Image (tube, rainbow over all chains, first blue to last red):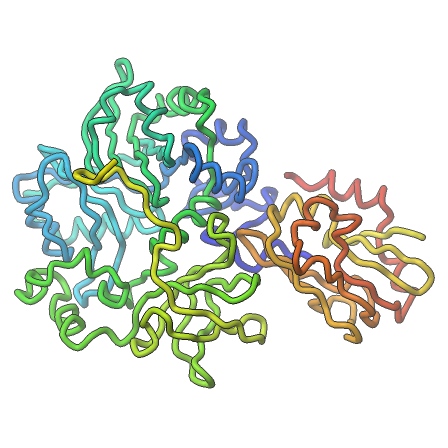
Length: 387
Length: 125
């Protein structure tokens, strides 16, 4: 065997002894290692890929509460009265309509409408707070700086920590430390305190479960993580389970399921696009995106249910008969689904739910059915929804 | 019966000219939860270093290489329904395949259990 490993989810798995030396370390690096994590390189950082095991961590998060260190992600602030309008010119959503304390998922677009990143934007009253992907943050910041007007100030705090607490028991646990968080609904955020320590908390996440993301100063991160993990319901969770959780939730992972060659219509992210703004030509690449609305995309991101037990992974070509019609961009075993699942792109005529296609894995054909995502229903704490 | 090991974390039990191949406790622990195993078909001729089997965990697919030359006489059919046997009993019921050895002299290139244990101890976790 076993050249560990032909494909790993998001991160290449290599034995620790050959971790590249120029990796940045997370503020919680020692904390992770003390909890038994295995570290892998991801987005330029040594990141915890697993603690007790991907399957157990995944199922724990769906049943209880999982604590993730996502401090590799970029936390960016935009200051200035025209910040929303300026950012809107590079994104397809209605950011100027965003109300204080609300969060929106959007996309950073290249001049040709290609997706440079996906990100969360929070209206933080006197500024906009952005969370962008770790692997793309430096490019994003350079692109924003180059394209924002001079009166918009961009601040980036490389040191700030970001923790995510996800799962059905997340609210109970976090409320023991910060009782006021129960006031937040899904996609709302605000400033809170843990004792004297300021926290920026949003009710959002990347697992499909109810949960929170907590931004705080790095010197308090270990104490805060300890306070959470002292609770019976909370365990630390690695990148491995983060990837299987987001795949079951149907979320694209930038750099795998989204890239600069793809636009939001191809990416099946039209919920994040204002058609009106596209037709008005109000953002980068609006022409391409309104044309895709008009004519339909040439290809589209879809989910796949897979026959049998063999996982179909990123890079597997997809066929209809002899014709290659697409590629799998994320795939693996879904621990909560109990079967292999995948997402990828297929030519538009094969993108309807129920279409039967085949992937090729190690020279063999595997039958797949185009299916709705998410694979596991989202369980958010939505305002107005029956709780 | 003699058990040999490789630097690729396989074990090989040799009984006469029949060898049984699996992956080690260390390998299963590194791979994590195993969800799929593909074993070679009966009759397949393997040359040392060939891709012989595939083992997939939640997060990754890994190749298992043929540790010696030989002809496959059986893949472990139990792994199709219960791939987790590789986690629970990697050096027993979780065996991968059996082959008839073509060249017994290749066995001298393999490690003994104590040499393998030393090899693993030398790998940083």
